[in-house]
Length: 294
Image (cartoon, rainbow, N blue to C red):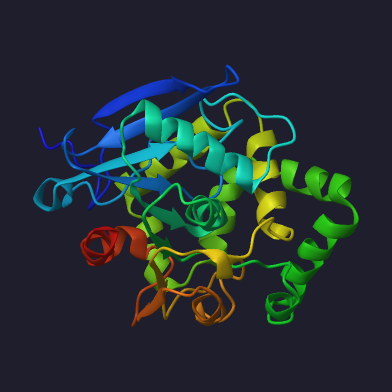
């Protein structure tokens, strides 16, 4: 039986947990050949380690794709007082445990700031940011946001308790409906595909199995000032955006500002694609990432 759920989405080939230096467990999943070139995925908002990408091209490209649940999501233990830099520390421990040898990385949507933190810390060798959230609280970025998102960014800065309460009301069903509501026609065709929708809903449910706190912390961290400057990232970074991406919480200028601030960045805007190009353009994203990672 064909195990592919929909183009580029399949159940993980391997699942496990890594015990971090402080005793916490970090849940991970893998797809592709076990001896392939490692590519770490920092997944999008409130999704678990089970939602991968590019499963139909990994063998051909020789890629070992690895995803991990951030603290408090899926099967990963919570981490009190965590921030973006502490995620880079967690990934460094995972890299050592799984012998990933300074992998390339992909940061999708809300996973982008976490992946950029890993690049800033030198934990990953090359990075592809796909439909990535920009530093929304940076004044030059905030000025470009729609008013509703500006208000959320300001709330995170001025009243994080109220922001936390607001985000905590977003359960998996509401999250799925919100994503559909923010999506244009190109993305709704992907998200509404029965098999993809089932995989996506399952990843949302798994991510919130411990409650909403993990997603809430992720969202506040992504919407407040980042504790590092992207201008300090030394490794190569490819920025991928779709011209038809209608999400108001990705990048208001389709990565133009990020590309200007990151020294070794290349920006790609895929005509007609939406925010779901992680799944529609997997081979196109992975091939130059692997080349630059060398």
